Amino acid sequence: MKKYSIWMFLPIIITLFTTVGLWVTYIIAVNDEKICRLDLPDWTRSCKFRPPFISIAGDAPPASCVFSQVMNMAASLVLVVAVLRFSQLKSKVKKPWLNIFGLIAQSMSCFGMTLVANFQLSNDEEVHNTGTALTFGFGAAACWIQAVLTFMTNIKNEGRKVGILRVLLSLAITVCVILHFVLIAHRTFMHGARTQWALVMLFLLFIGTLGIEFRHSDFVIHCVERQENVTYLSENASNVTPAFQTDQL
Image 1 (cartoon, helix red, strand yellow):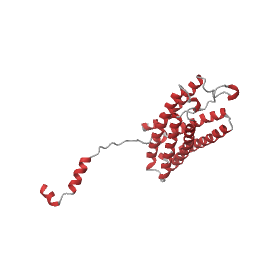
Image 2 (cartoon, one colour):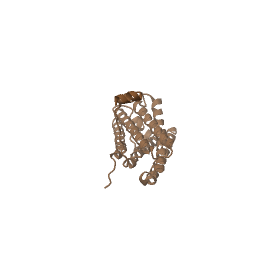
Image 3 (cartoon, one colour):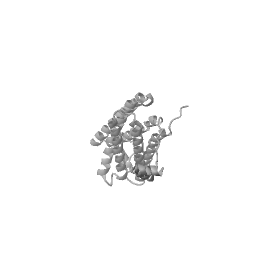
Image 4 (cartoon, one colour):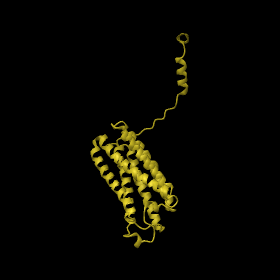
């Protein structure tokens, strides 16, 4: 059997952990009668509670406590994955600017996740919605960039198969982003909420696919102690006259 890198489990763990955390938030909010269930046919007629958007599910304690913790941890870990992905492709990609833009886009998406996590909808709607726009907008851009980089780098000759999968996921994510905001604008809240949940699950699935390439790479952090005294002595030795050097020998 082939021996793969243990780093392949990091994106998968992020996907599983965040998925479970968000659905726990949803279950708590439903049980506390804060939101309606997703399977109801119509929000206004079938339920007297608020529509089941993710932000509304995580708007009030105790669900908000779980939601904030999950989103903050997810944002931190996804940022780590983004940096590792940038490092993995740094020596392989012919257009470094595309790799840099991919890192920037994912970083902005993670920043948006922290805004969503720490500024609840009822406390600061403007900041919360800004975070949502950053998360979805830059997140979709990061997915498309990674899909293109997958074809360009073609790690272990898997680029075509994995690239097609990521293009399909990126296309589905883009459609969901557009559809979500269109449904909200038309006040079709139940379908808008379902679209939002589908969108987030697709994002998490995309992150999980990075484990495919991570299984071929080992990431090592080197810690080197600074040799200030050695450097100082070397500089002094270079300034010594040849005669003095001869006497010392």
